[in-house]
Amino acid sequence: PQHVDLWLALARLETYEQARKVLNKARETLPTEPAIWITAAKLEEANGNGAMVGKIVERAVKSLGNHGVSVDREYWLREAEAAEKNDPPALAVCREIVRVTVGAGVEEEDMKRTWKADAAECEKRGSTHTARAILAHACGIFPAKKGLWVLAAKLEKSVGDSAAMDALLKRAVVHCPRAEILWLMAAKERWLCGDVPGARDVLEEAFVVNPDSEDIWLAAFKLEFENREPERARVLLAKIRERGGASERVWMKSAIVEREVGDAVEERRLLAEGLEKFPSSWKMWLMLGQLEEARGDADAARTAYTKGCRRCHDAIPLWTAAATLEQRSGFPAKARAILEQARTRNPKNEWLWLPAARQE
Image 1: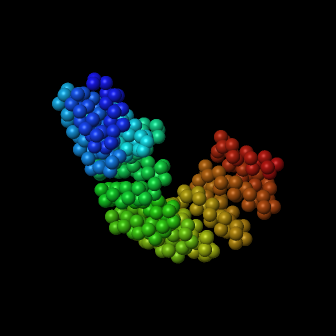
Image 2: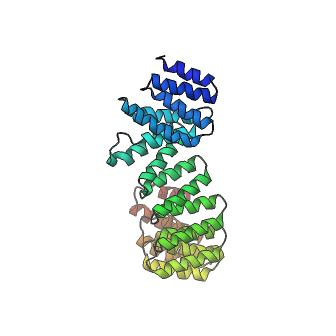
Image 3: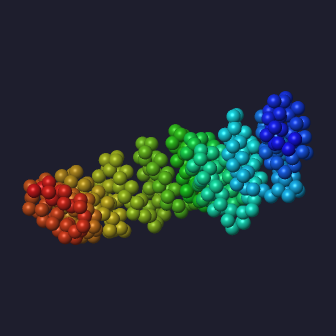
């Protein structure tokens, strides 16, 4: 009667009602054995009594404590993983074990770090549901910590459960409305699932609570631009510029939209205005030179590249573009001189030697 495996084997051979009686008798005989309680919880889940699982785990911890058995957190987490890998999986048992025992013996200041590490280790071992349960519990205890929500969302993403990820992020933005990354993840997931209107809805909600977030505005722009809605994209970028304080990225993307739709006049205007605000933006100098080259105005392109190289002497693409322009224009000596000047300014850059070698 003191052999727990015999009790468990007998319970497995019995009908549901008889198995419950066997396990009750086993608990009376071996009151310090947690495996009996865990088996009882699995029995209830297997017979459709999921609501009983949490109560059994809670009673197990209390009863074991009354008999001098402290909660061994590592043991219980291993049992949660075992329940997940049971055949069939006992996911309710896994989830309730985590809920009841994952915080045992962990100081409050160590909880977030400990639970993140626990979830990472479970994920490495393929115990995805256990990791999910740990992070869900952590988010419940610390709902205002966006990092926990991000980890939980990434876990759902890794297992390919888009619906679960979407539901999780809906909860996350309620608790962390100022966390831009959560809104962006939610919108991107909708978009990747083909729900462009849904992604728009998410970003519109994000605007309400984060009206000054350039990242959210740019995400909305990207959504429209890549879904071939240039007019929508234009309007969004114009609104960002009108608000003032727009970054270099905004001006460059504004010019890119105009290049895409073929409006060279507006592209030049935006690049000129952008370069007044960000004269060290080598990408905008490069775009301006390329625009002038496309129009066939080599002198204007040369001017753009020269000004850009003066402002951004470590921007290798600018130097090579300037040299290529001279080479194409029939001035190899000028091209050589530009590359020599570039190497003088950037003596350790290997990419400047390749065009020089090709020219020779």
